[in-house]
Image (cartoon, rainbow, N blue to C red; front, side, top):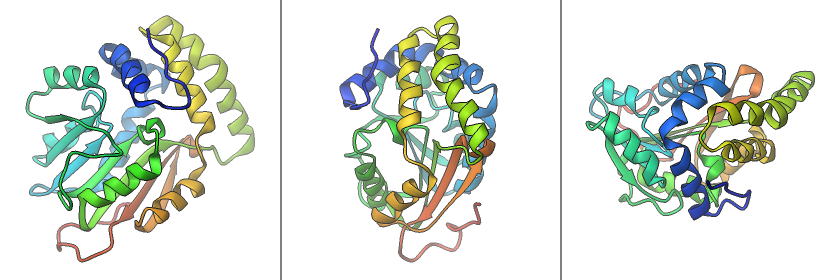
Length: 242
């Protein structure tokens, strides 16, 4: 079994996700106490895509986050660097376009997508600022970015409880339900080391995105950031998100 380090070497991270691909979605539901599904619905609403538009779902894994777009008749590309995760997704949803790709060097032309989104994956990229710049490159002017990521609870006592859960309870639960429990030790450590909401907002601005804003979910356990690529937008491409 593989466990990535916080250095986030792409080969280590990809191998780790390959190991957990088969049970990944089930374990996520258990560890998040069912909240993952609600968080993902908020992301889809924030993207606000409509039929006729094209969405990049980066770090899509098995495609769970891509399915709502496909079900709504929206063209979606599920991109991830874990081939194991993509294989699981393709078996379940052959109608979705699954493409292997590196977030820091996306295999797409400039201005290819009406919206780009990444859920719980930016934290695993070796250079997240470069990934944000790549997503800017492949998004059309006026297009939207939505990033969902674990963040920092805003209420101090709740933050203490959450940290205890991350570092103690989560690995213990993963030992019983996950095929590679060490992967979830990495998960806990990477969440604890991740910057807070305002720091990630600054990264978005630094990458060239505008109109940056975020919404806290579950008391700040998760934050959904949204931003817009500068330039003219199609009339249908902009929809209130947060």
